[in-house]
Structures are given as structure tokens and as C-alpha cells.
Image 1: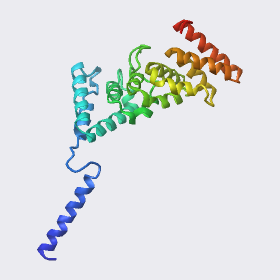
Image 2 (image 1 turned 135 degrees about the vertical axis):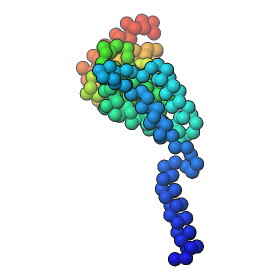
Image 3 (image 1 turned 180 degrees about the vertical axis):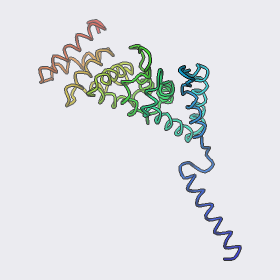
Image 4 (image 1 turned 90 degrees about the vertical axis):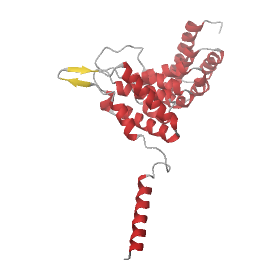
Length: 251
């Protein structure tokens, strides 16, 4: 093999491997993986003997700000950040971090801020977690519900399905999140009053009573008239009573 042929072969091999390593991102696009990993690692608690030190508020803010910047710099950067955050939310060890799962909570919060529709399913499966593991949790701590509320209408179908979850806390949090989303969820909830599964129908009626408004009230009233199942009809009536308690009969 002469020198010219050798050079050509080496050049082709180099171009091939460059294509292989760069296949996951467009040519010239920055790879943020190392920086994203390092940023999220800053939120890990530090243990010195028996003392566990949580990340400072300043560290939290700096990490959140920089991850947001990366996500806003390019489509590729946004994808990398969202994928990294989803991995954290899926990680049982991150979720169970003692005493507070700072990294997990930030991942949940930021997915909401970025309105990451890619994360809807994984967020819904985590509706029963708060990230507070070593302290008494407040009933008002619902980071996943807040994130899904920020995502808004795209999360509604999945949340309605979650009303039928066999995990009571997920079902409850799904209902409360739908109520927080409010009007963007109204049409889908009204459609759900005719669903095949009675548990979804009754809970959809209750959520409508929490949202309020003439449209919600009339939908519940129509559902009472049409429902053939006695138990479900009674649950619809209870939802209407709840509506009147919250909003009065004038609505």
C-alpha cells in the first residue's frame, strides 16, 4: 500500500468514527452532557462523619439558572437537559435521598418550568412522592402536581387516566392537579362523565365541582339524568352537592 492510499484509508476511517460519535447531534452542536451531570451532582448532600449537609439555596439557584440557560441555548441543549432531568426523576435513589431529595425536587420543578411534555408520563407515576424523606411532609408539598399544572393542557389526558389509579394518593393528586389546571381541563373532564369506567366518571364529576362554573354544573346535571348505574348516579349527585357548597346555587 503506497502512502497516498494509506492516507486515504486513514481519512475515511477518521470520517467514519466522527460520524459515529456525532450521530446523536447535528454537526457542530455543543455536547452539554458533562456540564449537566456536574451541575446535578452539586445538589447531592455531603456527608462528613454523621453530619449530612444539604446544598445551599445559592447552589440550588445557580444550578437551576444554568440548566435553564443550557435548555434555552438550542433545541439540542433543551433535549439534553430534559433527558437528564427525566433520568433523575426516574431514579429511585434520587427520589429517596435523605433527608430531602433536592436533586429530584429540582428536576421535577425544572421539567414543569420548561413545560416538558416529554416528561408527563414519568411525572404522573411520581404524583405520590414529595421528595421530603427525613422530615414531616406538609400536605401542601406537591412538586409533581405543580410541575404538571405548569405543563397544563397536554397533561390532562394522562391525569384523567390517573384518576383510575389503584394507588389512592396518585388518584387524589391527579384530581387536585386537574382542578388546579382548571378551564383547560374542562372539556376533557366533561367528556369523561361518559367514560366506561365508573371510577373515572365519578372522580371527573368531583373535579368539575371543584373547578366550578355554569358549564361544569350543567354537565354534572346532565350526567345525573343520563346515568343508568345507581351508584354512579349517587356519586354524581354528591358532586353536585359539593359544587353548591363551594360555589352556591346561583352558579
